[in-house]
Length: 150
Image (tube, rainbow, N blue to C red; front, side, top):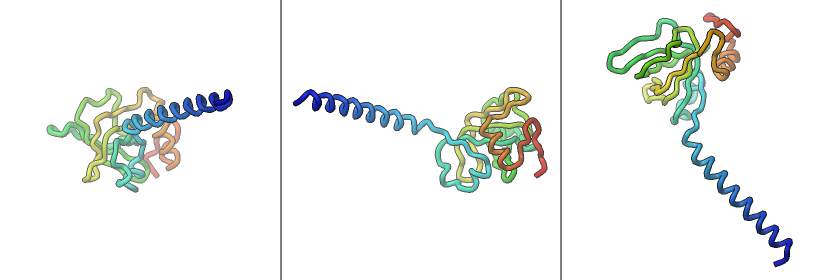
């Protein structure tokens, strides 16, 4: 082999190893990916939402109920739709009706969302960027104030 062929073989081998490493990392991470959806997007294509999902929106006013056996139930809404969320755990201190929330979990066959994690906004002006962007697109989020009328 000539010097040029050896160099090409080494470079090609290094690129092949790098490609295999990247493929292994992406395969390992694909199980950990959670996709963000609003209630409207989730209800529009429930068959696409079979894995772990982040559901974001506003906690519907008057929807929070404490069920003894199943924990807490509340509805997450956007401008068009709402989804009932069941969560058995301790809610964040800042969790309130009418505030932004992100729930992580899975959509059940009956159309309810079984959450294993609930995240609430952390101060008076914060809402998760993904949630705020989606609500702005629907005309439901107005910066610092949320308009309940459509």
